[in-house]
Structure formats: C-alpha cells, structure tokens
Length: 486
Image 1 (cartoon, rainbow, N blue to C red):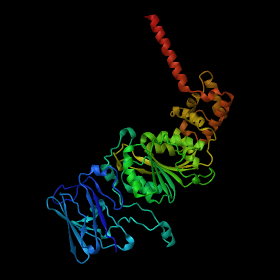
Image 2 (image 1 turned 90 degrees about the vertical axis):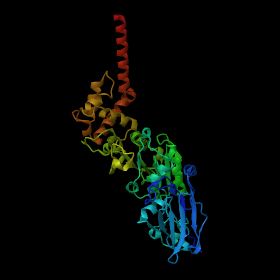
Image 3 (image 1 turned 135 degrees about the vertical axis):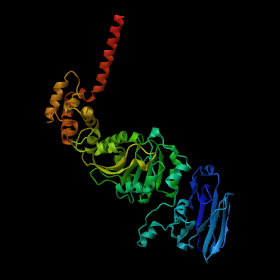
Image 4 (image 1 turned 180 degrees about the vertical axis):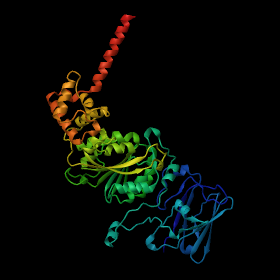
C-alpha cells in the first residue's frame, strides 16, 4: 500500500489582506521525517501538526488546526484531491495535491516556501514539485544498479527563515555579513574544485548558506567551526538533515587546533598531491588578515591544518585585501601580504561578490581567493625572519627601499649595515618596495640571515622597541629640565 504525502507545518501565517497568502512568514513548514529544532516550539505561537493523506485519497486524519484557518477536503475528478485553506476573513486558496506516489518513493515532503513560489492565480499545483525523499536507497544498492548516488539535502527552511526563526542579527564586533543567495554559495563551492568524497572544514558558517552548497557537492564530511553560539541551533538542524556528514565545533578559529579535525589516514607527504581536504570560509573582515598570516606560518612550519599535507583553501576577503594577496611586481597593490602569500602558495583570485549580496550590506565588495601550498617555498628561510624583512621594507612603501632596510639594524651601525645588505643582495637602493621581485626579497632574506649568524643580536633586534626607549628617555630628560627650571 503506497504511503501518501505528508505536509508538516511549523509556521505562523499572518493574513495581511483578503487576497494575500502569507505576506509575512514568521516560521516555516518543517521537513517530513525530521525533528523540529530545539526551541522552535517555544518560538511558535501556533503549530500545525502533520496532516497525512490515506488510501484512495478518502480522508484526512489527525487534524489540530489553529482557529485562524480552516482546511477542508473534497474529492475532485477521480483521484485528484483538492484542499481549500480558508483564513479568518473567509478568503480561500485551493491546494491541488499531486497524484499518489509509487511505493519506491516512500515518503514525500514539500516545503511551504516552495508552495508559495508555485502559487499561480490562487491555485497551487504540486504535481511538478519534486519533494524530498526521506528513505533513500543505500549507496551500495545504487552503485550496483549502475546509477551514481548523489547526496542531496532534504527540503529545508531558507536562510532568511533560519535568521528569522532564531532571531539572528549580524554583530558588528565580529564583522558578520550573511550571504543569502544560494547561487553565489554554489559558485563559491564550485571554485574550490571537485569536493566529491572530500573532507571539508568551513570557517564561520553562520546561518549555513555555504554549508548547504558544500553538502550538496557530495562531500564525505563537513567540519563547521563557529565562534558565535547563536548559530549553533540552526547548524544542528543542518546536521540532522545530513546525518553522519556534519560535525559542529563551537570555537574560535584563531585558537582552534586541528589535531583531530580530520582522519589520520587522509594525511599525505608534502611532496605528494594535495590531500582530499579543503578549507572554505566566508571570513569576517576583522579576522581575515590575522588568520591568513597565521595559516601561512602553519604552511611554512607544516603544522596546524597543514600537518595533513598541502591542504587547499578557498576563502573570501575584502576586495582590497584580495588584490594585495594576488598583486604582481610593480603593482600599486603590492604589499607585505603579496610576498608572504606568494612565496609559500600559488594564489589565484576568483570572482568578486558585490556588497549588496550580503546582509547587512558592507561598504566594500568581497573577492574569492584560492590558495594551494607550494612543495618548496620560494624563500627558504624561517617564517619570522622573512616576515621581519618584508615588513621592514614595506614600512616605507612610498620611499626608496633603503629607508625600510635601515630599520633592520641598530642605530649605531645602521648606515654601514644597510649598505652591506643591499650591496650583497644585489638590490638597487633607489627601487620602491612594490618594484622588488620575490627573487630580490629572497636575496635580502638570505643575506640578512648570514648577518644574523655573524651577529645574533640582530635577529631579536626590534626597531620599535628602540624608538620607544628613546622617546621615554627624552621624556624623562624633559621632565627633569622642567623641574630644575621651575
């Protein structure tokens, strides 16, 4: 005996007029076969329980409808069933049900937003709507039949409805901006490459827009790292819709250790091809730069997430930051980030997402950047030494490079050692920092390392600390002179 469709409603209908159907949606129709999210019942003022169609479309069982609407049932044209929903003002909408599904389809559900999109002139025809099958054939059975098993999420509330359901608001302190357009999230995931049977870590999933696109790409497992605990209930709903595929960690990505993030058998030697592990994230603006610097250091040391091998990353950045990461020699956007990223990774700039695609709308656009760690870094020196040299040179970006090279050395022999550094590295002192190639930075780092080996104090020398001590000494001397003058 076939099982007929289930319509499970967990949504408050607000009638704004005689001829309008649900102009304001506060909740959603829940997917048949899945549990309501924790706290949903407390948030709903009215709950409509499942209405199950039985054999021969003859009856509708187990009604518990609110007083604001009445659902009536009548047969029409043989086995076609017509439902009429009547609101408090006696307005009516006909819901025409699909024909009875076959026994193989088992259970079938259609989301309320899908119904609204299919509503035409008061008649909702569900015969063309493909619902979510709750009981799917096992992967092995489908493989044996010659068909490829592709995982698809069941019908879920939209991201907008998730935000309304859990009363989520973007926090300025965390630089949060929600990406609601699933076409853009699909494009982000497509840019990351083939994710089928891969293990993916998403940083800052928020309400879960990109997470849905990742799951629909056929990943083996998705690790979600979210700092804001307000998003956890919505992500748990996503986890229930994809059992065994989602792990949620409520932690700060800047302090999270990847010791047990992925199975150990996925690890590969650094010289081999990248492992089936990807890092994807729509990064908050306040976190993006310190996080990528931290991960670049992990790449240099081959630890953290890169202890598994040359893990690829697909991340979003503010457009200006993305241009700095990918800037070539002589580009106006050339900066410290350009050298630090390009000497360790192959960096590709993807497409740009306009600011109006986000909620709330940021004042800048966002660009996607893809990183693949290199087998051998272009500058074979410790990360901290390279960072110190590059940061010093770009300290005076609009002046000749010898100005930045000077602050690598103490004041006592600054001019002499600066001249020695540039001469041995074969770098023209009248070049501007953006004009220097990675090869020239490599020479500068190699010569500076040699000078540090000869004088170990250079490695720990900090120009800012020396300047601070000098200012403090001048201030104390000025105070003393003022005391004697008074």
